[in-house]
Amino acid sequence: MNAARDRGQAAVEFAIALPLVVMLVFGVVQVTVVVRDQLAIELAAREGARAAAASAAPSAAAAAAAHAATALRPIDISTAASDASVTVTIGHTTRSRLPMLG
Image (cartoon, rainbow, N blue to C red; front, side):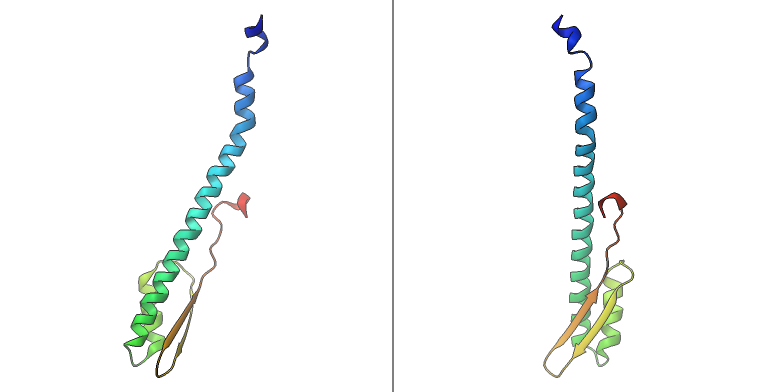
């Protein structure tokens, strides 16, 4: 009698839990994509600063090195150079590949 009453319970539990598990997996994937893009931007800024420090035309060298270092597009590159230092700032907006997560 007990087995007949519990029939279908696993299917109901699965139907309740599945959307939560799927959203959790999508969230992990989205965070992974954002972290990957952040690391690529940091690499591009580092390479741009290195190229700008060794070049007579720091803005052009920074832009070329940053574009070569990452495949992310579009990136905004700004370079500030003085006698003692070079600062390269790179901006990029990561678009969500999972629109339901924002």
